[in-house]
Length: 428
Image (cartoon, rainbow, N blue to C red; front, top):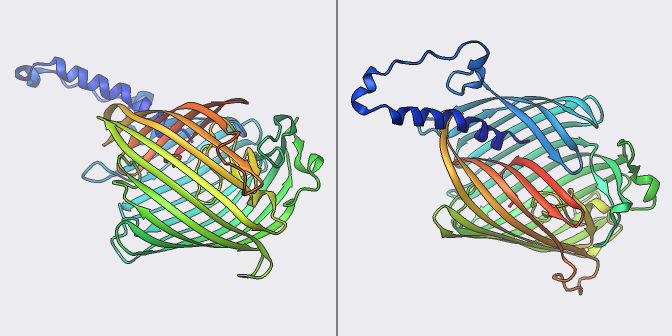
């Protein structure tokens, strides 16, 4: 979803033009300047000051889902401080794999302490989605914090290349991933910095045959892999969190450390054990010059015990997102490119604001962020995690509407070529 950055770029030109024209009129003659007539007809739809909504072009590029084209008519609701409080962003799109589709999205930011969102959509073939998320107590000013989500997702794009850090690109297969999950996170806030966090997740996942032409289905090449068909996971995880970041969305200084351990079973709380997990997820942010922040991320995950674990529950790297205890970014490869029992990942970004402007009753900043991603997966806990790392270099382009919204385009290049990702929020 490219709308965050595209909106910033699309709106920049008229805002700059208005500022330049105003600067050319001397103050003493300002009253004599004739008022320009408001746009009419089709042109008013492309002027953010007069349009009933903003028709933002959708150009999504992903190494797994291909190129998606469409339009996102977007409504923004802001408060008296010009902060975005609600975004309504449906879309109509076309994807060469799955045909015509639509989405309805609402992102709401009632306060810095509370957020919620609803996303639903479908395409002509295969894909369906419904996701609801609610967060409260984000600032940890109260004794408890809560984050809950409910998801149904049917995705026809996932790839599987086998198990191991050297799984070959030539072994590429496709599958349809259909999952339902409910997750709740309850945090006991010991102070503004320290939190004890419980995560409970119930998930049912179906790995179904692939539907993409010219790509083998997972069962044709990996018919014996654990995880085909329907699997269940009940995860109980306990984390100790230390967080000194100055802002939860657009961070310029501070750090966040998460040390966690968990147990997963197939059905009951402790019976029919699936795996145990332990890991560290850490981020650090340091300003090094005006409008420039050095951001770094590190994640290590181990599975001390594993009993017939489906491949999708193993540690993995690939794609553009970091999830605590889940997949880690490697932005020159598709999501979940490498799977194995344990994983290591690290990222360094140099985030620099290069321009800012006013648009649609809010303020937008454009940020460039060259980055380096390193990572690997491995089977034995005795393996040195810094050996045989996959390397990716690239550039992130972000449009920021403080205090809540970040839209991005991240372009990475690795050993298998270039990958482009779009979406909202930072990768970590």
